[in-house]
Image 1 (tube, helix red, strand yellow):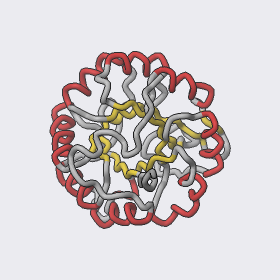
Image 2: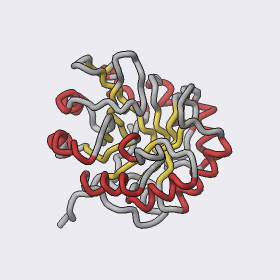
Image 3: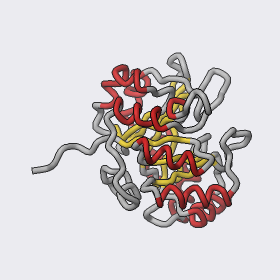
Length: 250
């Protein structure tokens, strides 16, 4: 008999210091996002700091994810090899061709996460017609996030309409993470999303932070872990890949 389905993972995004890594691990997160190549981003890291924090994350039993707007496959591959990240999360609007070039250049155990941006007010998802092409190019995992009326993307704090998320799922054969204004209190709103077969976990920035310091907070991350019923991390090797196995990229 097969065992129970894997519990979803929790990714907290935008670590900038060792204390953020410690809070993420203590609070029960599985994955920590590290920004580089995000022009004007408030949590942008230089390559040396990114490398150090990725190492600290692995030592703490966390999966390190590079979060980037970069579209240059060669530069992104060099950075991934230097830092040892397990995931590369492509924000912005990189093309399927860019994903394919990255997939061909990367080590096979580095996962590619492509963000799909959903506009507010039923504005749809600009990448919707390309989902199949992204999968064929080598995307391992999607992340569904909110864009804003003024075009901002990434850690906007804006919540998605569950119906807009569900409307994308028939086009996808890869697992997905949910992002966009997620908090401990709004999990019931996304009950149908969390029951979808491809649901793989959540990605949180704002709600993982202490309102007093603006840094990752153990109480805040613990509250997310409990409310979204994610499983605690248990060691450095466990989250090299997502907890549910992914099919090979086609």
